[in-house]
Image (cartoon, rainbow, N blue to C red; front, side, top):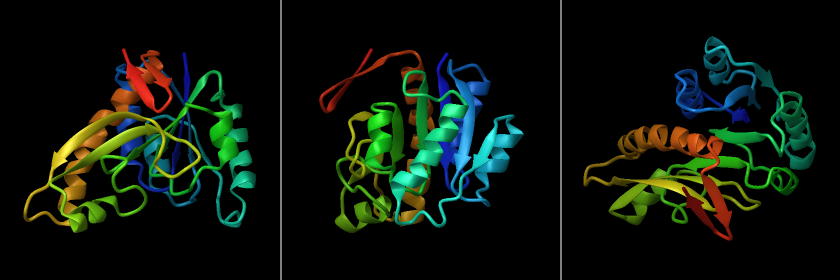
Length: 205
């Protein structure tokens, strides 16, 4: 069985949803470790309540060295069996950019969720970007992580129609509901070896 490592910075609502799906036997994967780069991340207590081991690896002081920080993350993942051969790494509100070395070591084994229909509106404040641009549809994307920001191969997407009276908050809430559906679905597909990568495309089945 694959070992799962989840990286968080805050509450980790997607983390919680994934872990609950695993606990209810919907996903055949071992939730090995939840790692936070912040001491006060609320998601740590949520993970502990669900019986998952947690670790804090503070990123403060590593602002100028992603590689040095990521070495510590990789060391912790390896300790809990989340390896490039037998692991999956999920980013769940992890507010750091992953170094190229980390991406290369865990090639096509790091996934992230983004609150927009990539390649549109990468980076921060995606919901605000969508509203300001005046698009009629937004949504969320689960994708593999590569060395650039939000540019890795798309795995699954879910579409959310934008309403005339939408605010950034109201749109974010509706997108988050879709995130909670498709992120566990992708983890399940990965655990069951149903995802293949061919260039920029992913093939499911």
